[in-house]
Length: 484
Length: 95
Image (cartoon, rainbow over all chains, first blue to last red; front, side, top):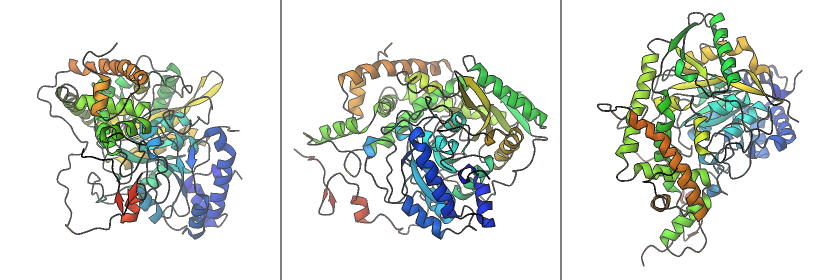
């Protein structure tokens, strides 16, 4: 029998219910695995084994996620645990409450276990912007795991987490999932409450699962979705079983290939793997239709105006008064603010707050922010038009495989362009999922490639069905990295 | 290349962030390149296009006006960098 930590959530739950092992056994095995591999991966910032074990001993395995440990990105509040967003600004912060997704996980019997590394305040695509540690890609530890939910993806890939929660503002779940060879789902805007998620860009942020399989992502979405009066953007929708279309095939599915998502400058090996995957979908019965999203090349520009503008407002709360870092011996209030924020925030966060403040400032608002909001409308219309012809879009998740640690840190614009295929999803508020579709060879490393399916807003059930059909036929999720 | 209109020090002051000389120089150049990149948005004709502020047009979300449990005072103060007598202590505001 394979090791416990190799199991997917559905396999783990089947084992619980057959009495082969208990949630406490699973948690002990997981902790042993973390102790063995995390020194090489550095996905975890902290974890509280005794508290989790107490929960595991009492777990009701008949609940939807009974006894399943779930790792949590360090931007989501778990009562009594640290929540730093990988920033010095929040060093020592202890959450005074559970985020809604955490309350829902607990009610479904899951055990939140461990705080996972990320780019500071979710700003980044490589997890190198963490103030605490650099997480490494389990397929090649000289490379980045993607970001910003890098710890959430690397831990699942390294079999040191069964599943995790991440957050996705411009690709922060799907891109690291692609680069680590696991499955990552960004639900539609409004599907999942963000109450208790430290806000980055409120018109774009969404919480979602990262797991080994599409089925596991669907099971977690079943638990975390729903209206919450603490988040007025969460939608009040009829109950839905997101696993309803799993186990099917692709016969009759209409998949659109957006021609703008195959650009010059993308890694040719990545392109070729995605093209093979599209052919595979066709062999599985899908009808492949070329579509156009004509405003795609504007998405990165729109995103870096809108996301930074919203971030500059959201991060104004870090004033060193009620929580967070406070500079010593301020001369006056202005000095208190300026030094507290200088000392607390890292470079990328400062850069983005400055950019966001600039595009909102008097005299520039119309030229940048208002114009970006108008182009956002055009980008949304592109998707609306495409979804009149197809059930889902199929495209690469990232233009490249995992790059080397340090390779892009001094070139923010190049780093931003790594998000070119994921950003428009958030601007449009639609849903997207990345599933593994093969490997490319870079130097001596075999690096995973992600295939992205995009669905129209609130069409997760169908999207998950399509992703699951491809995933089972292609079999790439069963491959695992060899971590020392 | 640096944007002629962006003065990083001036904007950082608006955002209440102190910058070292080195940071100011680096950010000036990096953000200048980002602004140059977003200039491409100006090539699009957006006349008559409505702006999108939100992915879901949800407005005026209301609930019953009844009190809900909130944070207790001790919990609210627990992360304060400086508190006394059950209050947040702030830096002097009035000269």
